[in-house]
Structures are given as C-alpha cells and as structure tokens.
Image (cartoon, rainbow, N blue to C red; front, side):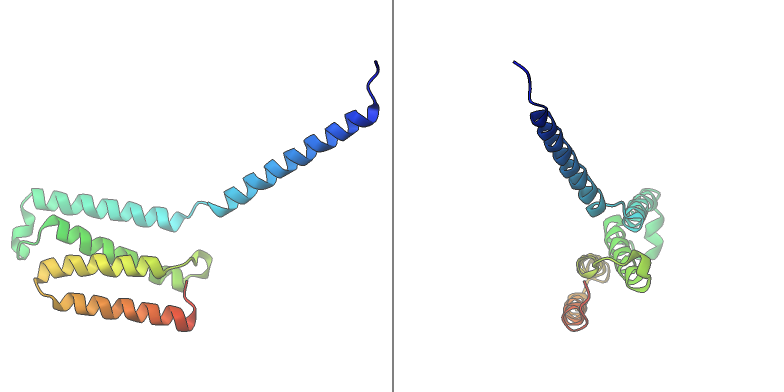
Length: 144
C-alpha cells in the first residue's frame, strides 16, 4: 500500500497551524506578563524599608522619636512608597499602568500606620476622604 502524497501535505499543514497557534499563545502570554521594572523596584524598596525599620527598632534607636513600633513605620513607609509609585506612574507616560488599586492600598496602609503612631481616629477620616477623592477622579477623569 502506498501513501497518498496529499495526506502527507495535509498533515504537514495541520502541524504548521498547531505550531503557529502555540507560538501566538506564547507571545500573547509574554506580552501580557511583561516584566515591569517599576513594580520590582517598588517592592524591593518596601522590603528594604521594612528591614531598616526592624533593624532600627532592634538597636533601640526608636525610643528618641516617641517610641513608634517598627511595624508602624513599616506600614507608613509602605503606604507612602505605594502612593509615590502611583504618582510616578501618572507623571511618566512610559511607565503608565492602572494606579487606582495602588493608591487605595497605599492610603489604607498609611492610615493604619499613622493611626497607630498618632493614636487618633482623625487619620481614618482623612484616609476615607482620600479614597473617595481617588474614586471620584477615577470616575470623572478615567484613571485606571
């Protein structure tokens, strides 16, 4: 029995189509999860900040400043860093990405930290106002 050459061509074309589909899938996945150097730097800075805050507390250097706890400083710093990242992303078009979530998380972390440090509920009112302003601007201006 001899094989029909058309069957061989048909199988070869199917293999090429499957290969192209797989290649397209890989490209779209890579493009979607492209490395973001700003996020990597932000999380590295947050980790460094946390390490420095814990080190300063363990060395007893925080007693000079009203004795805030290291975790309070970590929360305040992480919140401020996330808010600064959002501002940077809004100002630099090359690194523009959605910032609404980072702003809200940053404000919440900042509110928790400042609330513990200042021992007042006034901070939460300011945080809620800030989150509301971000939501309003996002709806009006179209921030992502």
